Image 1 (tube, rainbow, N blue to C red):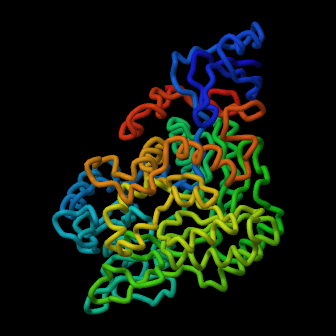
Image 2 (image 1 turned 90 degrees about the horizontal axis):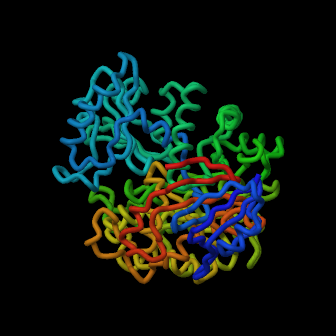
Image 3 (image 1 turned 45 degrees about the vertical axis):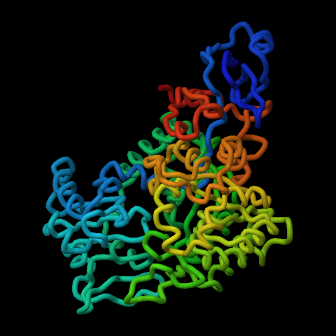
Length: 540
């Protein structure tokens, strides 16, 4: 079957556009003028008049969490809460919508104490007890590296009176040693273990909702970190059902490893990176590891103590989630068996440690498995130069600046802040850069992400000074990082990321020309249609 999209502004590469595209089955076969493409098309070709709108390659998000985003629809939304008082009142009101049963868990996501204007502190068990004392209440901080629980949830987990010591986590306690309800990093597993697992029907519902939303945003490929080792087969069963029902979204499955035995099983099964697991859309992505936590919760691992460390803990440097020797073992074993590794690393101490692991399995200028640092936020120039020397990928989220610009300098100091979130420098040094959102930590909307990369401002507060504007990138660089750059990180180069002969017809038509409008208007762009493999997957 042939399709023609004509009368469009077709983005080919920087400063280069065509008017029309000819598609045969799932591939692009010609780009050019309206006259040339229409003349080359068969008389039976389906023709679409783009009405002068911009046609882009589909966006490719290199790190997010689809299943968690889907689950959010069944939770209390806390991302816009600006006070502890509002957190309580909003949650009590939202329970009328959720109508939890007597034994049900109440979940909330997105709170951020940095936004609280009444009391500049973390919420605690007593605050959440005002929402419910009968049901367990568990609220995730925006970064997903800290939770707050009510007394009922702590009781069920056996944590209401004392706190065990967790090497790679923390349970906050009051002056009497009693848990406050705040739990960080791996200690959160003590709470997560009491939560009933999702059924496959619930997982299917969550993933269906998330995937279709992604398509409506203009995403055609998503590297999603949902699997944790042993549950890969469950996800395969669910995705197979979704594809049989007509889903058209390319998935690159990032797999977390709960323990080394899970990695050994992947190796025994021959689950190498890039292997197609469900034709033609679902492929094995990288192994995903965690080196540290988040900046907002002060669990990102730093080389030096936080500048704004608590007065009662002035040596706070964050939490190293995996010891360096263990991390090195994972990286070495994965590399020897054809598995790409990407590691969540936010603090400069974490980035340093992870880069050292990658240096041990790569050579100068050669990183064949395209190992990478996810987030890669707090860095200095020597760290970035080491990444460039070994072609270590940076899987970054410019949209993080919308919130982090308010706290980064206070956390790490002006000098280190000035070399952090260094997206322009990364590209200039030759580091392979790709974009993602870490959704639902941030909105999966690519245009919001693009605006943050180009302006380095908070889109909700454009009057706020740009965060070290010398690191702004131009719109061409931002789009390419989100398309052809992301495709390269996921071994999809030459197939995805461009509107070019021989590439898959993964295209989006949008209502604004993002290359010519004011940069603070990019976020308002809407997707008119999304096409994956030559078939419409979403139409507005």
